[in-house]
Amino acid sequence: MTPEKSLQIINDAIEKSRKDFEKDAGTPMIIWGSVVLIFSVAVWMLLKFTGNQSWNFLWFGIPVAGWPLSSILLRGKCRSEGKTFISRTLGQIWVTYGVFATVLSAVFAFIAPQFTGYLTAVLLGFSAVMTGLVLKNTYVTAGGFITGLGCTVALFFSQNEFVPLFFAAAAILNLIVPGMMMNKRA
Amino acid sequence: MFKKLDPLLHSELRLAVMSVLVNLEEADFVYLREATGATAGNLSVQIDKLTTAGYITVEKGFKGKKPQTICRITATGLKTFEEYVDALKSYLNQ
Picture 1: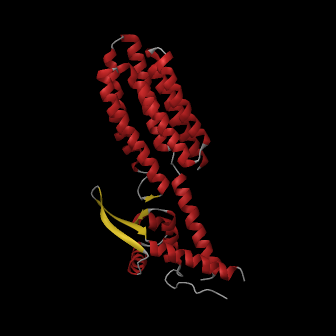
Picture 2: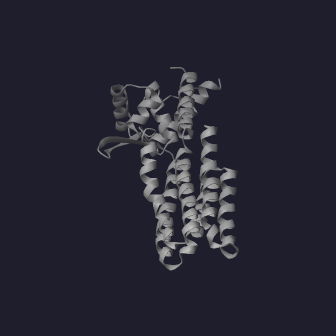
Picture 3: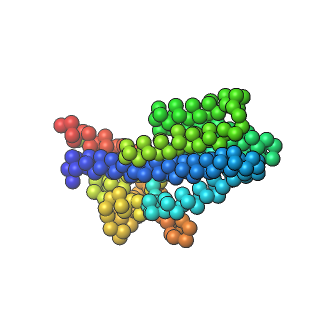
């Protein structure tokens, strides 16, 4: 084997790994973003037309629907498995977000349900910033800051009825659009 | 002066396996097979050789109900790979 051939093998392996990890990397974000968007709009409409605050419990439908849906839709794409530091870190950031968002929502559902949407959106923004910094992606980082800071400010100024719409916008800004951008780039 | 190329790495499939693992924290057997285009039998033999040399570690387990073999590069493997690339440069710079 010539040195050129050795170098070619190393180069091909690096390139293939890079492409494998970019391929469909945005799909989980699109799936979760779509679930969040659908539930946010549903909660907003139900609250608006019924006035019954119990519909806030529908937020818990996000993890309940999201986990099985993402497992089913991603099953065919994950036959083999390789992990980079980045893919592992991103996975951990979003699992942590899921845990915190669910626990926080559960607690605030009883204390102050009107803040649940804002707080989970702030956490969403924070997770998006972390994702953007790890990926060195300016759009994702900026989108996270806009969501996190925007929702913090909105806590003081906005009407509670718009909370689900903020969350829907955050899902588009921080999950769906970045996911589509990542898939398009791959 | 040419540097000596590690004979264990100077094989197409073993070099491909090491090159993949240098980029990843870990990879399962199926991923390595797809990445290298090798047959399962041949890959298994080469992985055994790399394991025996201490260049990689192999962890056998289960993912759900399916058996899964996870490979990771060791510190020795990483150092050897870096030395191999350095040695390659000495050939290419001539």
